[in-house]
Length: 425
Ligand SMILES: *Cc1c(COP(=O)(O)O)cnc(C)c1O
Image 1: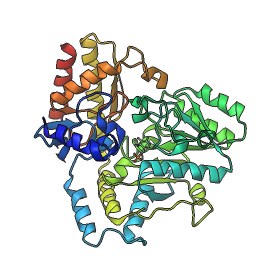
Image 2: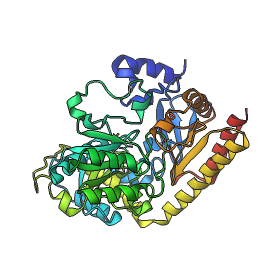
Image 3: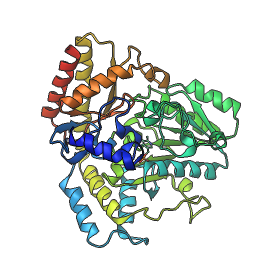
Image 4: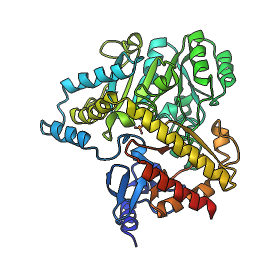
């Protein structure tokens, strides 16, 4: 029995499913989750002494690669002064100021502890600001696990065997309307049947929790226009795309501005951090300035802020890193597409910047319904082969591959070889 097998058996006695977040259980690909001991650069190492080129990157945060010395040092230094004070600290303002410099549409920002919390709070702000209750979300987009957003959600919910979650009263989701990704008509129809009632549209500007689904030309611009015509706010959930597609996230990458945006993952450099921000006028409804209540005992934690700040400062100082990352990622994903056609596979690869996924279906994947036609057992076989050959990909068809700035051509080319070997068999 491997050490991972032993540890998983032990974990299952005390933790539901042995994990603190469902996808980690490897339920949709079978097999035993690898217990990780350490990580460095593009690699992670498990307790059995195996090394892997890592395409999960902690689900995004490690855009600079694992265990960056500058980030680690910032954490060590900050922790020498104490871990938390529950009072204001200077580093919170430094963090907020840097975020507003990096993202033009964000004039004010509030720090929280996770992406879930960021989205939940942003939706509350949108409702408080507009005085309306209803929101529109897209089928297959994941916005964290808060009650009102667990409707046709992606990510682990897609493979959990239930469409949504039990324990969420119907009343909690009655204000959540759902539309189809890349389908502006489905959004317009909701406006027609709910005139004057929609506070906000929330969208993943690149959907990355039903696998990667790219916004078609005009989709994000169309949402912007619909919001403007109807007095609704546009919320970009940039928990994945933020600080990844560009310094200004998807807003910078696509040139579409949101009224509110939510952040997580990269913003904390591996520490539990989230944030939501937007126009000054909108953010001014947040307590204690305004009447929308939102708080957090550990929000703006100085150690977490120092980690995030160290990472964001490096990204801000080196905008050319994004060009390089996006360029090498594009080359990599295109090469996967070439391998698929060379091997006569009908599958497709969707990608934007350093996010991509292979869909094990012969359909072009533009929305949730398309994504769901994927052959998840074919994916499972592929994913396990990759693991057995030292490549760590997200253990689900409906997640993204993340590439970091630490992935060199050497690692990417080696990965392509393993992918080719698999599809050639
Ligand atoms: C991960 C994710 C969330 C939730 O963030 P947590 O930190 O896991 O709570 C929300 N929205 C999107 C788009 C995400 O990818």
